[in-house]
Image (cartoon, rainbow, N blue to C red; front, side, top):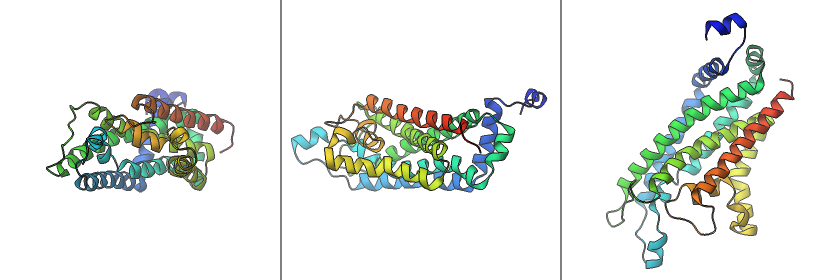
Length: 262
């Protein structure tokens, strides 16, 4: 904390972010959730790649995309990171510590911004590291008869990088949902509904027409692929859609926080 902050009794983003980092790093759930994310993603990626077989026909070879297989663990990672984002916001309300936070920093949007900067930055770094580790480990697990993808191949580097960024986006969506509801069960239910339940329902009813706009579908068929998938969003369009979802969740959460009593 700077001396200026002491003198004026006011906090800026740097001081708020430092406070949020202290709170985040002191929670046991943070370490466990991130450790499970790393172990789960790498394990699923390696197992999936070890069981990947070479395509048996010319048409199958055209669409064969082992990069998408190695990123299969993102489905688990998004659930853990999204839940951690929810708890980062709702945990303070359930425990009552939000009163201390707001007593120190009355600007609720600043509090939410600091949480988003700290948590989003942490998960972005972790997401990129685990995405590259998963890719390299999964690539090594491929059978000899399967052509291994390389980061120099078209679309592969982009798929790995955006898969790591996706984890940060889902984490921030969870944070936004927590700010909107301020209730852990409700926010987790909304997160699971948006990422798992609604995509399955809409895919069953309308095919890809609506389902392709949901985060999980974008992760598995747009941003996490090296080769285009028919009837799905292009990679950068899907990434832009995810950025929009994140901005809306945090924006609505910020507006609602300023209208409610702690």
